[in-house]
Amino acid sequence: MAKREKIGIVGSGFIGRSWAMLFASVGYEVCLYDIKQEQVPDAINEIKKQLHELESSNLLRGNISVAEQIKCIRGVTNLKDCVVGSKHVQECVFEDVDLKKEVFKKLDELVGPNTVLSSSTSCIIPSLISPDLVHKENFIVSHPINPPYHVPLVEIVPAPWTRKDVVARTRALMAEIGQSPVVFTREHPGFGVNRLQYAILNECNHLVRSGVVTAEDVDTIMKDGLGMRYAWMGPLETALLNANGMKDYLERYADTIKNISETLEGKASWDYKDCGDLVSQLDEMVPLDKLQNRREWRDKRLAALGKLKRDAKEW
Ligand code: NAI
Image 1 (spheres, rainbow, N blue to C red):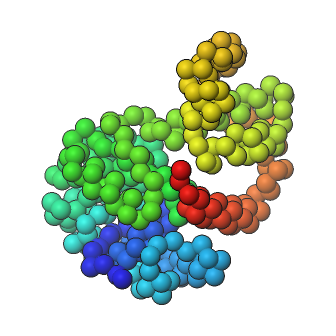
Image 2 (image 1 turned 90 degrees about the vertical axis):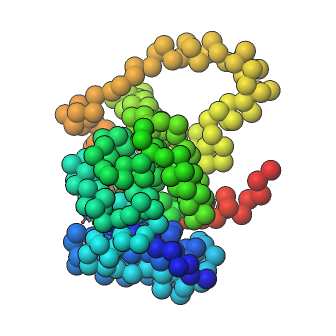
Image 3 (image 1 turned 60 degrees about the vertical axis):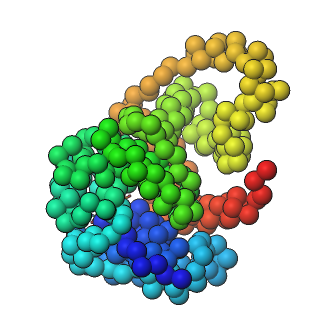
């Protein structure tokens, strides 16, 4: 059943569309707005197409029918209609601190004290976006992982002035739409996902540049090795199961970790001029004119994995 509660989505690109589908999956009234007004009807048509496809593959999320979910989402042509009366506004505009500050300034003027103002930013710490807002205690980052409809983690990162009940409300909302929220006690550059991702990318870069393995082999190491386990349990639980608990793991492997870690080079150069080999190998592996096909394939496989994980019994 549709709820009588509204969610405003600002920005109808990759992330805004996915959030709209997620909030509609449990019956929220979703209003989608974009500064490029002509893009919103296309976004809604694309969402409808995706929802029908997901339903026919038995991969639709949520607890109401596809027809009801579609009815929950509407496009609007101005910011006011999008956000006034919303319990939560999810901003999804380009990753640019000045643009985000400008958008939140406008939102701040439109909403009342009961609306949570949430940003999808991947890396901008919340205190850089929100310090001048009247409703800054209602500001929070809810960082999704692309594509959010299929990858459930949301990093919930408060600014120093975010109220505790806003953190709790946001966490509850994310859990309600079937996402997997992790709440940070305080802001931290790169939050969690991008700190881990960039540590991995640095080592990928070193491995390829040193010629020890190819770019394709680096990806095989992740997808057919570490990634197989990481889809089901994190690196810490993975480690402790490789011995008899964490204390035993450390007794067995602490020296190995220390010795190998001493050979790690830390941050790599990401200057394009230094990454020619990496770029050319990857362009050959996934030609630029095949990116969209590859994205569609990825999303299908992630949807199937997501269903497998949801259906698997937690022990
Ligand atoms: P996108 O480029 O697909 O979409 C951005 C949308 O914002 C565009 O449709 C644009 O017209 C609209 N826009 C720009 N200025 C606006 C304004 N003043 N008012 C309303 N709409 C405006 O970008 P994407 O990938 O959806 O990213 C959005 C946010 O989500 C960024 O902060 C990004 O860092 C974050 N994010 C992106 C992920 C990704 O992998 N794509 C993953 C997690 C977070």
